[in-house]
Image 1 (cartoon, rainbow, N blue to C red):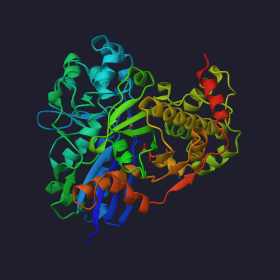
Image 2 (image 1 turned 45 degrees about the horizontal axis):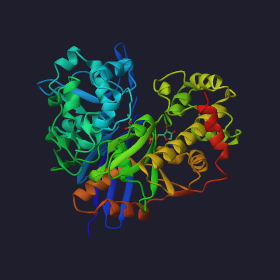
Image 3 (image 1 turned 120 degrees about the vertical axis):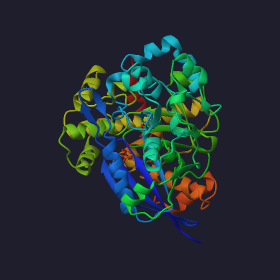
Image 4 (image 1 turned 90 degrees about the horizontal axis):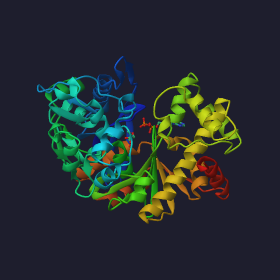
Length: 480
Ligand code: ADP
Ligand code: LRH
C-alpha cells in the first residue's frame, strides 16, 4: 500500500518547525524540513509575536518539505490576529505574556463571577485566556475596527488558503466554549460584551481547510492541488493525540515551554473542587477532554539560560545532576513566573521567602528548577486522579522535555510511577496522524496510538526510592 507524506507546521513558543511525516499502515517516520526560532519582540506598546517571521518560516519549510499530500497547522493557544474588512491583518498579534491583562480578571468577575465562569467554560483561571485578552483590548481602536478574529493557526491557514474558520480544540482555550456542548458559550460572551461574530465558524479536526493558494504553490515550488487539513490546532491537543498510551490508565505531561500535566477524559470535571485546584477542561480529539493543569515548564530554564548568555544546555544539565537533590523548591505553578526577565533572581527570591537555601550557581538554580518541575508534575497528576476519579499506572512525557533525562527521572521519582518518555515531537506527530486519518491511512485514536508505540523510540524511567522526600519538599512550599 502507498505511503503518503504530510507536512505538519508546529509553532511552539520557543521555536517553529515544519516536519514531514511519512505514513503507511506500518510506517510513521518524521523528519524535520525546517526549524526556526520564535522570538517575540518588545515594542513600545508591548510584547508582540513576530508573525511575519513565523509565516516566512512556514513558507520556507514547505519549500524544503518536497511534494506533500496535505498540510496541517498547530500552534500555542489563546492568541489571535485581527483582520479588517479587507481581510488585512491589523497589527502584530499580542503575546500572551504581555502585561495588558494585569488586573483585568476583576473587571470580568464583576460581570460573571469566577465560579460561574468555571461552571460554564471549564477553564482554569489564567490571565492570558483569550476572554481576558479581549476584555483588556476593550474599546481599543484596533478591536473596534476589526471584522474578524483568527486564532494563530487559523490565521496562518487563512494566509495559505484564503479560507477562514475557528478550530475547536484551540477555540476551547479562549474560555468562550462550553465543554459539554462543544459549542460557543453564548451567554458568557453576551454578558461580557464579546461579539462572537468576530469569530469565523467552528471547524473540527478532519475538516477541510481549503487548498494552498496559487501564489503559495508558486513560492514553495509545490504542485497543486495541495489541501490544508484541519488538525487539533492547539499544539497540546495534537501532542495529547500522540501520547503512545496502551490503555486508559495513563497520565500525560506535555513538556516544552509549558508543562501541561493531566488526563484524557470522556467528560469535563466542572466541580468547585476542580476550580479550586486550578484544573482546566480543554477539548481534545473525538469528543475527549484534556483535563490538565498549566505548569510554568521549561520556560523557567529558558529564561535563566537567556540571562546566563546561552551556556550549553547539556553541560548545564550534567552539572545539575551532581547537585544535592531537593535543597530548595519553588511553586512551578505560580503565575508570578509568567513574565520574562530576571528569572534567576526571581527564583532566588522565592526560595528566600519560603525560608529555603538560595541556589547560587547556574547548576544549583537549574537543579532547583528541575526538582520544582518534577514536584509540580507529581502534584498535578495526583490531584487530577482524585478530582476525576481516574487512577493511573503510568505517566507519559512527550515534547521537548523528553530530551531532558534528569527531568524525566525526577518526575518518575516524585510521582512514584514509571515514566514513558517520547516522542519529543508529539505535537507534529499528532498533527500528521490526524491528517493521515482524515485521508484514510490510519484508523481511530487507538490505532493511531498503536502505530506510535510500534514505530517511535520510547525511554522508560522507573521510580527510585520512596516519595517521602518529595512530600517533605511539598510541605516546605505549602506551609503558611
Ligand atoms: P515549545 O514547543 O514550547 O517551543 P519544545 O517542545 O520544543 O517547546 O521544547 C523546548 C525545550 O526542550 C527547551 O526549552 C529545552 O529545555 C528542552 N530541550 C530541547 N532539546 C534538548 C536537549 N537536547 N537536551 C535537553 N533539553 C532539551
Ligand atoms: C503550549 C500552550 C499551552 C497553553 C499555552 C499558552 O504551547 O499551547 O497549552 O496553555 O501554550
